[in-house]
Image (cartoon, one colour):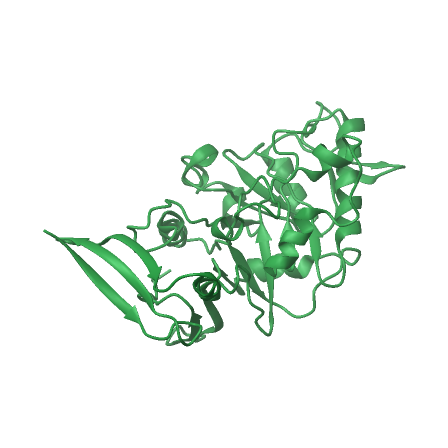
Length: 361
């Protein structure tokens, strides 16, 4: 048996729109197909639709800063090191600022560059990354260097340091873990898993599984859930994205929400910040539909020169929430003895349900 059910939102976020949700239901399987339609025509309807996505931007919340992660823009390889004219205000920065993103964590040199050396090329690439990140950062925007190394641990993962760090993903037998270079300062050479964890600990860095349980991370982090590096406080957890992209699912990104439950049942306290994993950031791209953002509970935006350790600390402590933009959680509090959960929600599209997940861990 299949039937259709129409739900009417008499006001909508604009106060006068009529948003209808069409739900096609099969017996025993609620919400098999879902989409929204806004009645009317012309430019006025398009303007009304944009109100449901805040005009494709992330709204400001007092006490929060917006942070987005995992971008393979490859501005350094494609423009800077390729000898092309370097724009004063690159289009990708304009896109992020237009969307209301305060902080960007890059994932450069993905399939490009020379992560294992030779040192002369690897260090030159990192210096270009650091210099451009510094140049493009200001009091309202912070561009933080980062990579998706995919070495040592297994699967794909993100590396995030609270300041520029020069490191090469190889170490010769008998070679030093750390050495001083007169041009670059401290340079680390990483040869195995122990070296990598040692670097994360020494430089207060974080790592986490990218797109867990799919693509290049199929089987991860499950395969290393008992490894020392995963159980350390340097391993943040895994990243969330809206996969599977199946609108018949009641929960967006159920794959990683299930993983969050699993990780905590493994006896470790882990986080799942949202990630974008996008390769092209241009004004003509449909960015908002494929983006997400993390709202970090923190004050003033850190500067590039003083470092951004507060960003890593906020992620590690779980003082953030992740969203595609339409649902916001300006207040969230758990009692010290877990006796209560207090929160407030804001949303544009009709909210179907809220869920509180707890455990004995």
